[in-house]
Structures are given as C-alpha cells and as structure tokens.
Image 1 (spheres, helix red, strand yellow):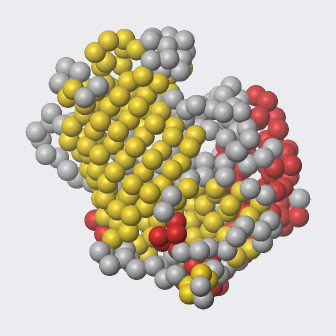
Image 2 (cartoon, one colour):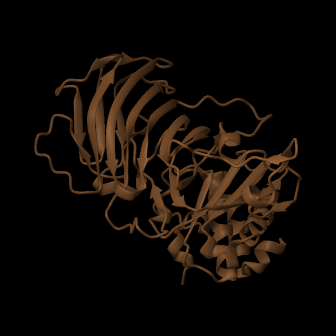
Length: 394
C-alpha cells in the first residue's frame, strides 16, 4: 500500500475498497490474457497497413477485418463506430472539415458493398450481410479510409498527437442489439474484444507509444536491457543499450521513415501516441513490462519517477484485483484528449501535471481501469474507478 498511501488516502483507500465490489457486480468481466491463463478467442481481428502523418493529423491505409459471431443469435448486419464523423463513400458533398473519417470503399467477402448494403449515420457504419451469419460464423471485410483528427493540435511544437477513434471498431452485440456509438448515448459505446496486427509507417523523426508488442523492436532500439524484476531503467535506448561484439547498435532510418509492426491481443482498442524525441524508461513487475515514454522537457519530473510509481501501484492493485491482465503497459504524456484512449494497455497522463502527488493519484486511478473493459454500467454506478479522470483534478 506504500505507493497508494503516498497518492492520498482520500483516493487510494476509496479506490481499492471499491474495486472488489465492482468486480462482483459488473455484468461482463475482463478475461485474464496473460501467459498461462485459459485461452480466450476474441470476436474480432483487425489487420491494418497504412501511413501516419502527425504534421497533418492524418492516418490512412487499408484495414482487413474479421468478425466472428460469438453470440447464440444469428445476425444480418454488422455495426461499427468511430470516434469522429464518417464520410460515406457514396456521398458527393465533399465536406472534409476535420475531424472526419473518409471511407473510400468497403468490401464484404471480397465484394464491394452497394449503397443499399452500406449505411453511414454520423459515427456509425452498418454493413448488411449477403446472408445471415449463424452463431460461430465469420464475416470478412476490407476497407480503405483516411482519418484526419481535429485541428486543435499544434503539430509544429513538441506536443504529442493521440490517435484515438481513428478506425472503425466493431460494436458488441448483446441481448439482440448492437451497442453502437450514437449521439444520444455517446458514452455507452461498446467495442468487441479484438486482436490487432498493425503496420504503421511514420516519419523517422517521430516515435510511437502503442498497446501490445513491437515485433521489430531490435530494428528500432537494438539490444535493450534484460528484464530484472523490480528494476528501473531510465532512458533505455541511450543509457542501457547492450553491446554485441563490443558495438552498441544505433538505429538508422535512411529512407526517412520508420515502420512499426505491432501485435496486440485481446484488447478493446488500438489507440496510439505519436511524438518526437521520446525518452523511454522501463520497469518490470514479474512478467509485466511497464514502459514510460515522455519528451525531454518532462525529464526533471518523469525520469525514473513515473516508472517506479507505476510499478509500485500495479503491485498494490494486483493484491486486490489479481495479476495484471496483459504483458505490456505503456504510459505516455499528452494534453491532446488523453481521456479518449480505451486501450487497456496504454495510459495517457496530462503533460502539464508536474505535481508528484497528483501524478501518483492519477496513476492509481488510470492503471486500475486496465483490469476492466468499457461495458456500459448502470446509470447510478458512481464507483471511483469508473469516474472520469477530471473528477480527480480538483
């Protein structure tokens, strides 16, 4: 309890005392996806190949989507939603005021969907299937799109860009209905659990903070220090590089681009952060890797501190909630819509918070939510673990 006590008993104790009751009362529990746990097969698989352009707040590419009907009912359509308005491929109005997602084309089982089979309503896509999908059956979609975030980010500064809600997510089908994100119930959007295989190309001046595992990490960072439980490494890329034959690897991206090949399993979101000049700290809690990513201007407060606190908070929460359900947890800084990240493997803290007591408090709140998916809760549910982050800022 040492870390949480330092974070303030008014949050730490209330938070920890409320979580066991929450675990007993919520209708859908978070499966444990760590190695050695019972296998869990998510309902959706996303495979994306595309380019990220932080300067213009763009991401574009091709998304392959596989949906498995994991319910006992048959379904005649599949519903998806995004975090921003969608431009229909059949719409000729050319209204491209950001933020938006322009859907260029969408195929089902390799056949383009016609105007009568594809319905776009604000932030929601409804794809009518050629035949009803029985329980256990699979539907396959391919789509190309371009997403542009809002214009509120100063891309010429060192501010990070948080890409959240940038791709179509399959809504959860429960009790005969799709929980899609509509204007009247915006906060009750429910995505299905999914596996992600992402190939992101970005200007080499930028780095990414992402959920899951970087497959080509040696291409980016060379030989990083081995995992030692309870160890804290500050600036792993520059200060803790391992030598091979007396030589330390220094990555070169002669093409001017970096390619990130990322695999994330059993999560509900793939939000990521793009930023220049990131420093990376690491901490290890048993088989969990905690990686903290921040710009040099935050070093005075963040260096070593956030990684150590995150490790300590995680251990304290594991005493109440059980083993952390994933193998990776990444923590980033940004003032660009940090509360919009739904991934259970990424925590985004406000970069203008420099008070260490408040940082500890926010870490306790944010990390606790990694155990739970975003299922809709009862309207009278005011458990501290579910309150928005800004409830703790005052």
